[in-house]
Image (cartoon, rainbow, N blue to C red; front, side, top):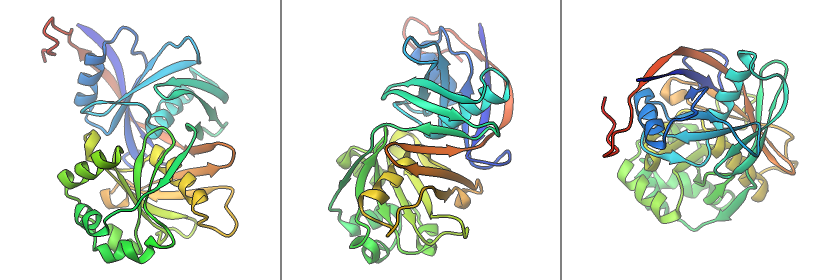
Length: 299
């Protein structure tokens, strides 16, 4: 049977077992989509990145949740490039990566910080039924209406769409108790990967906001720290004029209610970029069985 190196790399984190764990398979050449999906199920983290050769960029990445392939994943991109840099496979500077949404730039600073340029932003304000959204998230609808006039709900994407829902206070966001089936119904209606709820009532004095991401439609009940949604939220904040003077860099905190605190750095100018550090927490080998003719993976 085929044996592949597989790692767990904690993205948007300064130390292991925090931030958002991503699976990384440094050499996925020759693996079928079914085998990649089986590996993602086995690693059982929110997303696993598979590195492949590319004809248009320095490398290609495919991303799988335990349930399905997704077009883009910020934290897994950060994790994969942080690993390549840490191992000496690539140096600091600008690299390109082929994804299902197109070729994107990735910049690695000398200290290992990885910056990912995301896809062209799209922000669309939407009228939502706050009673329904509040029920889906397990948050008092009044906590959503309280900020809805100044910070309306919106569908935003920088490669992967999310329904963005502002919440008035951290206490209300922290007490969220989402109904996965209701979240999935909303996601299907708005054609998004999940709901990204956030509040400007953050824990850290240097933090711009605190967020939680519920993505049960793609197999993730709650994503600890979310790069693509953070980029989309950064674009949203500029679109709605959230600040009198838009900051050069924002810091989004997330994951604290899952005991995996992390921080995403977000820059919105001509392009949307998200950045952060990553640390390896597990490095080993995984045995990958062949795909049978009936496409069932034999464990």
